Image 1: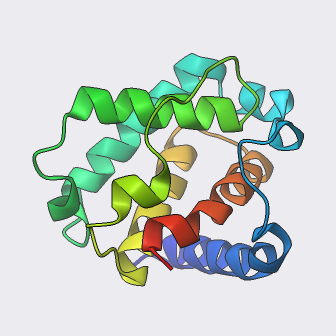
Image 2: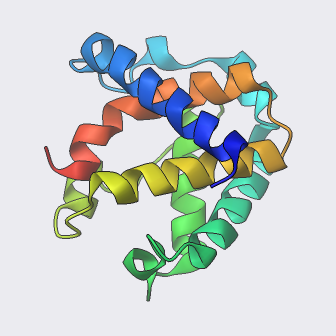
Amino acid sequence: MTPERFMNAIRFTLLLLVLGGLTACQHPHTPDHRDADLYQALGERAGIETMVENLLYLIVEDERIAFQFKGIDVAHFHRQLSDQICELSGGPCLYTGRKMRESHSAMAITETQFNALTENLILAMEQNRIPTGAQNRLLALLAPLHQDIRGL
């Protein structure tokens, strides 16, 4: 792992620790989580779609998590994740997918796998030149989903 990836992983871990207590009772789809400036910083819908596409390429190359995505409908996954990030970031999209707990319940996702996906998301954001502040704001919106994705 490069020093930059290591620092990003540490940054996200610290962010999760800090936000864990602050957001444990909040639902990420509430209006006070919407932030149109974040949507702009992510490059609006086109930027989000490109970021998610880059994330998918990183997932396929990552032996820690690639097997979890084997056999998925890639176009559907891309659309759903793009919609979810678009909505969370204050964009005009509506996420209509399943709840995180429901869609991840049978996957037995480990903390290592969760962190690997997070690392890849950070790399995808960096590939798209998303400013660090915007990266952190998006991660803060996604952090409350940790419990549902991990089934805790």
